[in-house]
Length: 436
Image 1 (tube, rainbow, N blue to C red):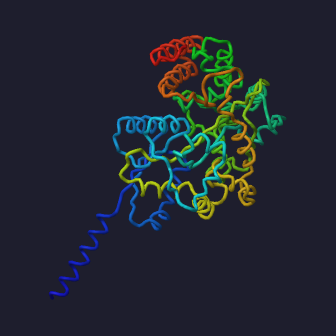
Image 2: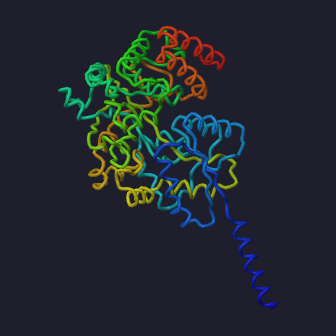
Image 3: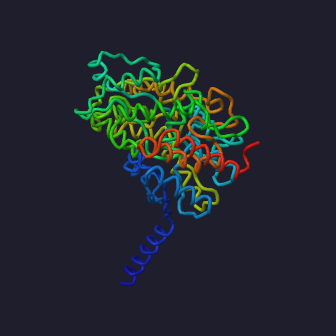
């Protein structure tokens, strides 16, 4: 009896020790399809790391940014792993808010990361975030609708061609809209699209002295073109549509063209998810002959807040989720088509991926053609293609996005939206001490 009691006590003690030593990582992430897939595959991580539990906080893009920014700025410590974008990484690294990722393991192969993506996540020679997927933007279109309308999509279309094609393939009675574009307000929602688009129209956020440029003709041309095309040939309620809403519209056959993130290519080409999977073609983002296309450069990345008490466990998770092995796991479970794109050279050298993903070369070309250090036609004092890499941009970009979303909804005119954008941007930049 005593022996049995001793054995039970010993087992209980071991069990308690195991529970006590287990760490729970709280991971903040965005509700995009690739991240949702990652959560489904984490049994693989848990098997390899039995002492680490995972707790997920999955949020819509704008809300995620707000909560994560507030938490890290106030040292709230709610999250052990953060999903953040290319915009935040260098700014937060310089603020001392992120841990450098020095211990991702001997097999991680940092040199396999695409240079265009890696450079945006590196400060003073150190990697501060690991890319989960990378992207540019491009045109996704319905080949069947183009054929029916007697149109042929060029590999490198102009904006005028896009507007003309949208008009010809729109069938409002049949609930097919020629063009779907982001309209939801947010610096990373409608302003990501409109800033990249404005680059191809010759516009810029600021001149060399940090003076706001929304009172210049290039921005007026951009916004007028966008609003007119969307009102005539876009879906109803477009001012509420972001990436996920437009993805749903395209997958259900309601969009003739969609210009958005290259990462969407696998979703619209997957017959399990898309009604038009076998009808999708791809082209480079449009231009106006000024030397810049309307495509951006972005990555969703995993980072660890500075001062974290769970750095070792967090690094293990970050390394797992952004490794070549994770890519192979996705390919094994869900096919090469769904491998997270835009981060590793080895993926684009993989014959199985090239065969499964007809958009692979177009994605890589789009990523490599975006130039964050020279994003616009005219000189600018900032870096960033679809954003301005200064801390104030998050607030200013969202406020401007609200004005432009209101113009799309018909609540204000284009001129009123631009006037408000100019005034609020000038005010905030003066407050921050930028204009020289």
